[in-house]
Image (spheres, rainbow, N blue to C red):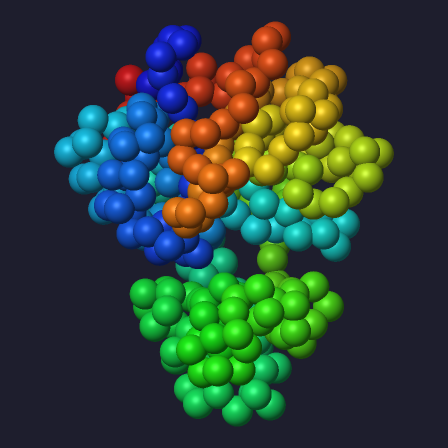
Length: 292
């Protein structure tokens, strides 16, 4: 499938549901996307495609084209980096096996977060955080909500400031595979690997150029040029980096929950002219994985 170049289309290739760390179910997410006039959507939950089938049913009912998507965590020079996979075969057995390993890594991390926060004496912390995540692997936001409910902190922001933020007891680094391996998973499943929100890693310009060059050499095909929380300067820098490394350009809101106007489905800064959109190179029929 190739998405045509049409100014009336609204393309959002990065968002999250309750299948990972989003606040809306896949159905609720798709309905909201339709309300925000999104025409083409990729559900990119962290390290899982469990929400895809439900999202696909909702997309058909709401007139949205759903593209297979995922956001995978990996390591590059000891930095945790996120790679978005797009337009891959959702039923590829090797890819699904790799995701199972990622899932085990996430559960190990969740258990360690609970262990490190055991001094707070919150009963059944891991179980309650898992319930907050809808039965999936809980992340730090889910632990924060339980801490608020237990009266340990006043709000989620305070939970992160005292216990879950960078350098705090609950800031547990996960055991992620290397960047090259994750890119290979996506490529082998027939998809396109996209370097997600490059400016959020707080790397210097030099290191970000190094990351992008290494990503391209590993088989990465695109950079997420336009995403939420960016300045016009970020947009210009990433567009320049995209051209320099001869890569495709992607975009996405990175939506997680309602009520944050700076991060809403379909609300994406227009990409600068002169870039080749990643969606011009999609090959799969959404949800089927067969060539068009």
